[in-house]
Length: 345
Image (cartoon, rainbow, N blue to C red; front, side):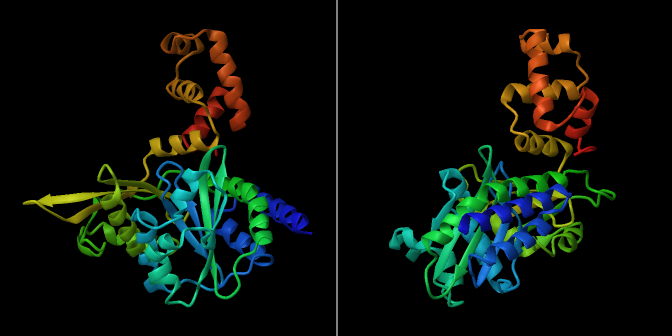
């Protein structure tokens, strides 16, 4: 019976993604279907940037996480201290992690468990990663009070995860198109150590409206600030889905003034075309050599020119192109170039 339920869920979610549904639509329906087997008091599903492993949108079920707790959750995901973050789960290669299986000391130090779940009266948690072809495209967290999540519930989530990953990836690819409208100018926010804005440019107001849904600006600023401060490089970089069908590039780093590094500069801009190409390469699971050939095709190079540039034979170029066509569904060089440019996804 469990396997049948999982199979039905997989079929429906993959079919929905095949219609061109966006990430929010896919995750909204998946939440409804999963809840029939895995009960939760609160759930949060995320679109993950496969490059930075940072969440790019958040979708909740019928019971939303109270807004005042959302920045804390963002900090717990990007601050580098909490156990079993979505990024940690993706890097580990594990599909499902139950909080009760983690060391008690780690849970005791957890920001999300101590400052979010406990005040809300929730003491049970399970998290799931949605990975396809070695890249994580999404994740979901489930919390509830009372009885712990059972092994059978974890088995159901494990069975459903591959299809949920494929559907999330497809929905993410559907959103790869140029941002509409004119350039509003630099969108820059100066935040304090807690991720609160203390100064911003006028262009940020546009993004405040655009990001008011799945990724609220306050949550994004908290995540970017925490991410920059916990990063080994001191830089936070993530591609974020704005909930309206478009991708946004967010970057953050410390502002150094007379030795004071308590402030962080966060910039927000439409994701440039090169970001779409990189995401598509990841979505299609292209090899490094196949990516090189695709870039050359997009640049208008002939087979002979690609062969000379890459120091391979013309036959090898054709073999790579055949593999790329099979993975992308493109039937010609022109169609492949169009797909990579975001004009035909």
